[in-house]
Image 1 (cartoon, rainbow, N blue to C red):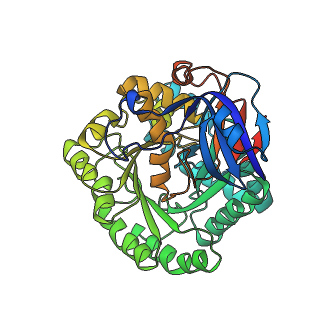
Image 2: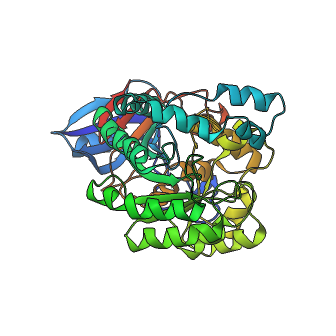
Image 3: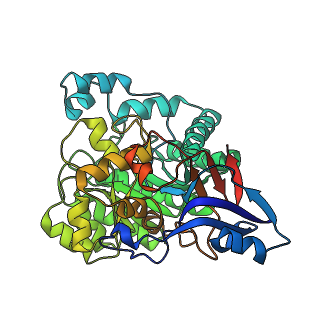
Length: 411
């Protein structure tokens, strides 16, 4: 369908901005009384609405009859929304003073979600994933990365990744699957961590490729999960099989981000305890630093990803929700990013870049994240007259309309 959408009080294009480093708000392109011309799922033109209306006389006009700030759909580059059950008991224990490790040792933590997810059927996981993704879409998130990692054996990891693939057929949003079979060594695996990773690489990787379930491999590099020395062989096998690499890095102890740079990972995610040395290494690389403030909020810890230092050093910084049942149950990407921005002293341009084209870089997607000719027509409309009010309201004001591939999918 060929159509003109508008007018918008402000159209925030996010185009012509640097991929890495700081961005001042003055660099944002703000088109007043803007419009977007769509042909099929692509943007073919944009600019002043009245001029576009005269230029495209034969096109259908989809009038926006209220004040609206239009911007690209958000891209959440790190979630764990394919799971069953919840960990509300863990949250209550954390609030009463128990540590993450104490909760895990008493039967909570990741393993409790693994048990509940293993008990769920494929159909149940499809529905749970689709429901959570639909909520994200209503909040303006048009592309959603989804990890496995709550199966922790070949059969159960395949069930989760197949559920993610099937959930796509229920959704308008795009789901990008990632295999996180290396989330932790399962408690019911009798061998070493190295043996577990070898088994996953030997038995799971070929099926992922054969069924086209994912092109992405993730691993949690941490003392409570897998050491860098244990992860190295696994990552080598993943690269030999043509997978893209991403790493849960530097959440509680540093080492994962160095591994990410060494292996040319597309992203290093978390980075709450990253040091100056690792910041310099990431800034000199093409690996995207993905901040996950929701995890800091959910765990009740005071240190967050040092986004300001990373940007000032010249790194590529994205912000993702880490939506999961344990450490980041909120799942509200905009609210998290707005609060993170004020703590880290990020400009609005830096926050929005971290949620759009810089997040797209973390998923190696070059067809979205900005509003310009040739890009997917993924956009969201806020009932506001100025883009600065989006973050000012700290996530309370949501989009009143979301477009995916040029089609209005929420109202």
